[in-house]
Amino acid sequence: MTFRVTVLGAGSIGIFVGGKLAAAGADVTFVGRPRLLDEISANGLRLTDLDGGDDRVAADAFAVAAEPTSAATADLVLITVKSAQTAVSAEQLVGRVRADAVVLSLQNGIGNDTVIEEILPSCVVLAGMVMFNVVHRDLGAFHRGTAGGLAVSDDPALDRFAPLFARAGLPLDRHADLLPVQWAKLLLNLNNPINALSGLPLRTELGQRDFRRALALAQTEALAVMDRAQIRPARLTLLSPRLMVRLLTAPDLLFSRLAGRVVAVDPQARSSMADDLALGRRTEIAWLSGEIVSLGRMVGVSTPVNARLVDLIGVAERGDPRRWGGAELLAELRVAKARAARATAHPSNDA
Image (cartoon, rainbow, N blue to C red; front, side):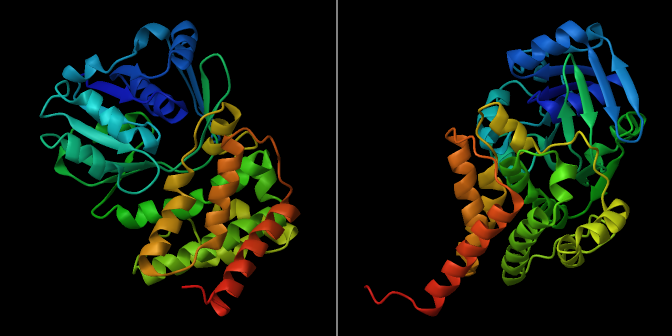
């Protein structure tokens, strides 16, 4: 049986995942921006990864469209848009997607599946996360630059698709409760704003202790918020989230010796947030550091480090080309933390 798949949000992640499914024999339609659709229509796809994988998909082996009309016959719809576009994208499926189709959200952040389910109540809507980074090179070439697979909420509706994903080299890691995985991925994604502000490839940025210390500040703050909210993030690497924070602060030589055993990063990899800033697009900062700030307000935990990262990315989104060095970014975040501590110790008497 040939499965019909619609990928709604044909960016780097959507094209890589959909392209792998097409290479495995699925009938795939990509829905997205003309810029990328024109590129892959003209060149086909070349999908590579840090483990040496190399798949080529001819342009006539998939379809492209500006609107998700293909959802009317799709067995599976993958939503891979940025979180800010979730509701708008789901609305495009109303009256189009079949009631027996599975709609799988492969997005960063928490709660996108809930938004989709409210708009498409008759469909099986499942949460999922892409646990790897994809670099868009050019001429239809997309490269998986970090380790990881696809984590999804378990459901019997996935049974028929599991062999397809396995053939594609993207076996589904199915979880009865995906929330701990989503929160753990959010912790890792707190590096996205730091990487974007640095302007450096991920491996170069993470190779500098001051950038890692900045990430450790953001993650430590996030873990405090999660503790108060009684959220227990899953362990996604060889180390638990708290041990990972300790590793981040280690001297460069020690980190370089140990990090390869913990997380693999290709020299070409950059964060998706860095790509968004380079293209003048709005980022997902509200669903990353902003999620920690919002949760902190709810549970009464101060989050000055993540709040400052939200502010700095906001400045960058408005066109500020500044690239931060590790020492100056770390100092900026430490100042924000110290100010918050002073404000807590000496609250204003103003009523």
